[in-house]
Image (cartoon, rainbow, N blue to C red; front, side):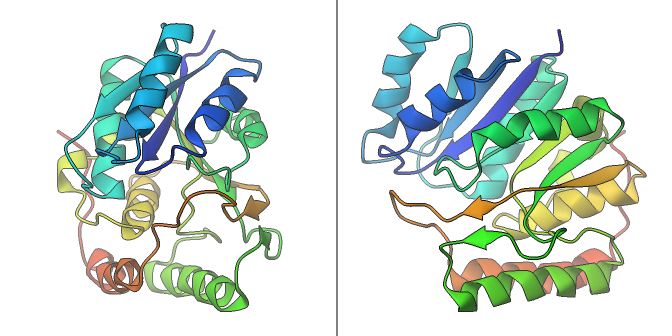
Length: 240
């Protein structure tokens, strides 16, 4: 059976973490979970440790000292997953904005030939629930901007719900990934695209969190805007 791991970064997710872990483990297909815990003061790590006693073989956690950014959390997780020889490596939020029921659809897209499957909010119109209209417009046109500047045929360039085949993460030079916030999602997709891997978008419905607090900020969008311009002129080379 293919080895699959879902990487979930957390910071103050005590309202969601137990439910999201149990939802993933209820799926068919023997998914494992790696939580990247950034020193949440609300006790998120203690909840994960308790659940590790219930799921000792399937639930893993890396604790980091403080809030070090989304991009570095995922890169830490990618290195761990590659080292532990997982075949399929997923990214997912802890807050149920990504529906765990969609994980098998992302896996299927990769099993059928894609190297990166993206859970896409925009490849089938706009599929976002509970966001203010201003945020929907900003996110949608951010993806249009990225697609135009980078010439990448991906509708949801900032999506954070994804499945990679291990070979993609072994080929991308993770040491050279520069963006840390949501720009990280763009940079990883662009690197995948430039290295010749096949990308497929799988339509999902994105539902904004109902518990906990969003980590989005205007600085995140600023990094993504300027980072895309720099990315356009950067040579993307495979890891040696």
